[in-house]
Length: 398
Ligand SMILES: [Zn+2]
Image (cartoon, rainbow, N blue to C red; front, side, top):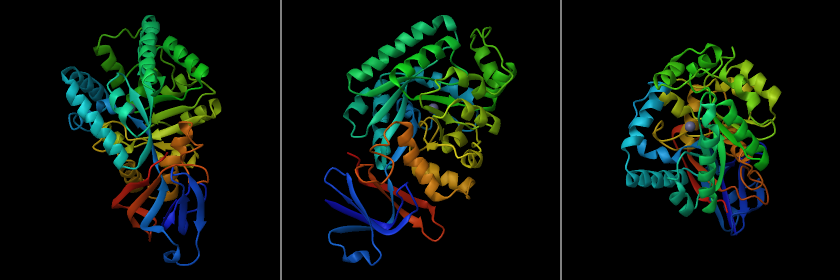
């Protein structure tokens, strides 16, 4: 048995508790949370830390296979530049370089106190690392295709890739890339499978302003970019609405939806999603948004709507780190009124719920093994992170 205590414990089920400790069995399962009114020094066998204990983080959006693109794309040039550069760099990449970068990224996630990752894959590049890693991944096989005549073959290819992950005992499911890159036919194939398997869908949403313009009236940088690629957009009909309300009805009503980015989401869009689905999760990747578009989502608005916000890092193509705590520092810097205790809930509890793992991750409750993370160099006076706050895992999840 282990006893681990700290100045504060954030359980994600109530207020932060001062001078308390956790009792864990040899598998890291919580047996007890003990609130101690006196001095903790008297407790035998207690490991006491100066800092804050929080449940292990759940990173709800990465692209491990893009890790080799670190520092290769110029920041703040917008999404169309980003997509076209990805294509160019991918063509020149060598497999050993790709594999080394994936394995380093896996190490970084572990160092940063992550206990579960939702990772987007277009290829089988990450299978080897995921197979041998102690960190569990949920892989979302991402598909796109605007041409409705190719929907069936695109879908069959994705199923083959999904099967390959599953044959390696890796959790995987199929998901649409983004609101603007999937035909109605392809959406319906994905949605049908999601219903059959009760699988969470993970979709890039409103990462750029021009995504909305494309749906409103077939204009904007993104539309121009697709036209320049020679794609046939004749069957793409503008709806007069932003992208999210335009496609939401094509997504499953009863499966969980992980909407990623939400940089240009409005109150009206949120109302429409809430009216349609009770299972929406809103992943934000602040540092990637600053990297690509130099713009953050209106996180105060998301917070005031009481949405289930989750935290992702996106890929090393658009971020310098795969660190949840660095994302939290950015949120705190731009939205200082959001309480730290809520940020911690976003980083673990909400992600665990989105990925159907709340029965053992996401909070310090008896019978769970969420991993125990320690935040050090904490600003206790203001109950906030400092620029040099760090996190590490004291106990892994079992
Ligand atoms: Zn992404």
